[in-house]
Length: 329
Image (cartoon, rainbow, N blue to C red; front, side, top):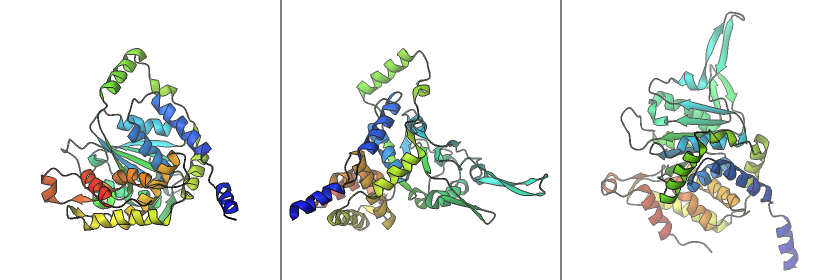
């Protein structure tokens, strides 16, 4: 009897072979240009599967923008790049109503946000009113203009970049805006071997544009199918409790001025499923949750001023929280 039940469970398992193969193709296409940065690419793919937005933070020249552009190029979807500047207005992003002499009425001209994959470069270069234009579209996948609601076409993903070093002429993103990003990815420098490979590749390319060799390997419909598939990944009750304990610990931690909200719990659940899918599994493990925790939480918690002055970072506190919670078996 037990054997039959096990066979039934095995038969009902989710087939992850096609998803895994497609994502391997995406990685291969990106690897034609990008050296290293495996963690950033993994998190971007997890965000794609989770249907969540991403904030990438790193110093100039570490391939933040080019990686996002290449990822968009591997998927057969619409792509828009918006360069945020201090003089950018909300209408420059969302669109505006223009009076038509032909029809004698106002017509709405859609802005660059009306696409599938949106790359926002230097998101902290624009003032609060322009940043706030993204609130509704990032959370609800829609915008409201002149009382009319416009639904964004799926899939819809916003990838934004920012520079953590230069603060002159920048506008800090408010917590409400940060909370709309599924992940915040910190991008570091390549190591010695990767740096040598980058130099060699540039020398051998003779200034040819390698991005021309990157092609579509996933259709929009395939991506939507994968996103639905990820929602069905199995999460045991004790792992849901594990997620809840992590979030509650951020609220009770003495080193944090602000803990994570229930939205962070849902984000951690969704992201953990995506990481399981990236590993070819149809079930979540504690390691998936731990791997997702840093990118999900680092922008949703605020380190207390005293600890921040001591050099304590959000990542270090998250690590301490994860080490202090018993891992379910």
